[in-house]
Image (tube, rainbow, N blue to C red; front, side):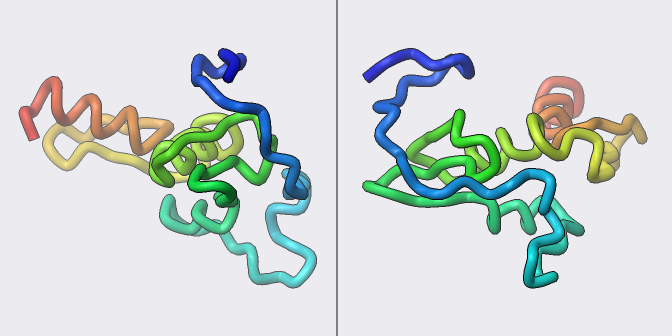
Length: 106
């Protein structure tokens, strides 16, 4: 295993086809990204690990961590994440979760 640019350990073993980030609408027209949960279409799985299908630079054993990477690196600011307690807006779902836990104990 090696330490990659994203601070994660990985075996660099994934050799599957990557998704072209310029074609997020998809050739078949079914790749609409309207919510954070829609990012799952860019998550690939092989040998018990999940991979970013857009850049192949990130993998993790948990799918949600790969979705967080995809939003932060490829869709930052694409979705509205507004704190229901104070109205602050965040560029990622993870940033909102961190804020709510730190400042609102939710």
